[in-house]
Image (cartoon, rainbow, N blue to C red):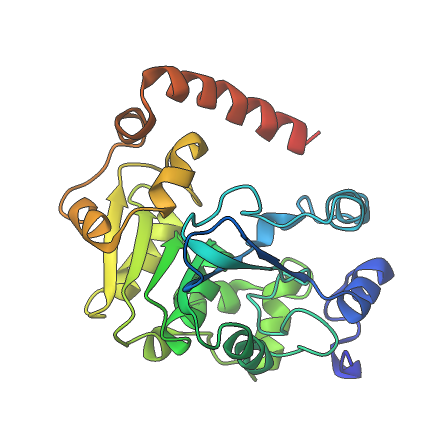
Length: 284
């Protein structure tokens, strides 16, 4: 159950709390056309799954559309696909539902679901945080992290119940301590950290990763948080093999040129128009 001590801290409409309590907030699908049944991919949603933070948007995107990020962009060689979302937008610290109600229980659930599989984890921003955190714990073959967070210390310190109820609740849950996953991610799992070098928040997060041996940075000359290149190239990118990802770590990437290189100029132009249109409709 949702612990009563959190009532009034989450400041979510009742529909959100009821949805967290009674709905699974994960989706498992299988690709029966897959040549091999060796791989399982886990896709973690970001805090952008319902934004702006209103009941109307929650009802539209989560209740009516049952929205999961990454649903239409998958790892081709994966037989099993697990889509996970945190409707409380708490960096998965409160798990995903009334039964899987902590990050530890979420880890146990994912271990059970991925037993016997080679694992790949993916996420952006808060989803990238989860990908970087759970990937190593699941002994994943690789973790793909788009501008994820590694330490929430400054954000937690600057938060309050009024200005940022999400981070304020994290502060309360950790008795005032910072949320830092750097000690939890040092493993043999390579974390491919795609970061935007002109985004103030992401530059700060990048500093935390220096010296962490398994974090492999793919730097983009961009101020865009989240996915720094056009999404028309996203499917091809997430399906790169480890040696191809390693090659991209050797120099700074330019988002537009990167996209053109991956999908060609015509798809880049159409993707730019499509992405701009979707962004407008999403906010209106």
